[in-house]
Length: 324
Image (tube, rainbow, N blue to C red; front, side, top):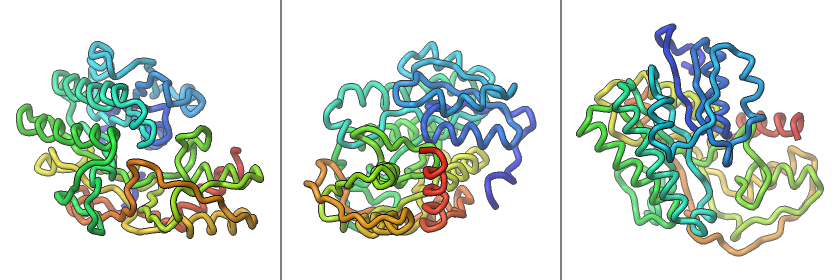
């Protein structure tokens, strides 16, 4: 069952933190389209107001410009809220290596503020963004919850700490928390600009602009690229998951494995380009291979991703052709 058919109380209120970002704005839009009320909390440090501007005409949508590093802001934003979808964070492994203190402030303290505010204000479900980066140097594929290695970056460490707080808030305080270990999410509204941009939108824009993309490493690294609608489904199904499944983290991927060089040539073909890429050095902190075992999310959340890589990438390319 797709997320569009999911049913909540007609008066349900959702709070999406980081709601002006790539994943957050897609969540806001989807929930509004289902007929529910949405609050969006974002300080616009990495999110973009233009992502949510079309939503502001909807009377069921409220935008709060604020920072999750401020507990008072979190307390105010969570009043009367049923479900928190905590997407506010700074991404990018390389940037976290450059700015570890900032990542600790935003990704750990900010998330803890949101959990505490949610606990105090009686939020029913707290669903938060984690990452496949928590698997670190563990070599075994597919990646399975409970088999993690040593983390390779400050970003990965922040997500690991968030998961531990999620577990504690369930055990100690009874807050139903669900960690979403995202595997390389892509799709509409993902920002192609900047040195920390994700690889798929970056390649698409560079190819469309006639530039020569650079692949870090030999291109044989693999990823479980996951289309945005699968992530929306996972978050909303977590809001309806049993309390017994709370305090846990779940792999949210498509369950596939794509090699970066193959993805690159697929994009070239789809865009009608014949451009050989540059190859640069490997990036510090990057995992070599990733592929999600999604059986736990399937069993405990009812997660059943509708979009494989091919279906998702075609939709993403169409969106970028229309919007870039």
